[in-house]
Length: 112
Length: 117
Image (cartoon, rainbow over all chains, first blue to last red; front, side):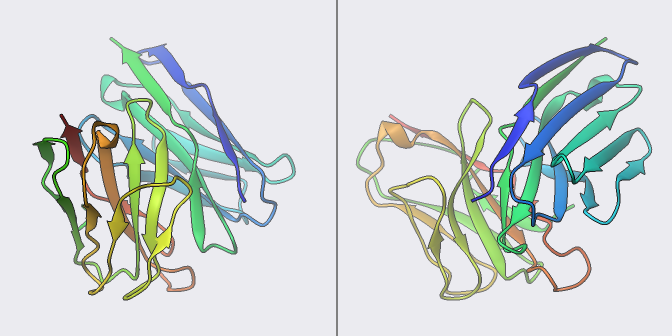
């Protein structure tokens, strides 16, 4: 089955700096890669996603890049703010889109 | 805001009790999922369903059971709770790939935090 690795497991940045979280996947047939943000006491919520037919997608301060050849994708957050502090999960579909597997998560702390 | 609800939000019970964690969604999604999340953050899929009368075991073995009698409802039951079942349980739902629109995106409930004493 699919295996998704995520690094780093914890990340601390100063407010205003950028944060980058990287994920790798194993199934070359995977074609959909969402990112979820989980705030304290809540369930994960989708923040951005990318499909395999594009290499980059941007939404205000967050962006995701995809390298299908290397099988890795990354989340980029610019001008970080304290409210960006949360746990972030990457995910990848597999089994022709029928199932998903999540990365182990990254705890991001934005220090004021 | 996703229309998926979990009750209760918090539950503290004694060993040996039977419990049911409720999950309901009003989005008409055919697929539903249960995840167990430990303090280490990682999401472990324990059950999923493709639709009514369909239930499958996930990647992590669990002593819990699920049922899917109605599209909108996917309860999880523990017949005899033990301290090892203490965890956060998250329910999610999604459309099937090819359903159009926001296919494949999982919407999560707020979770049930279970403590078994």
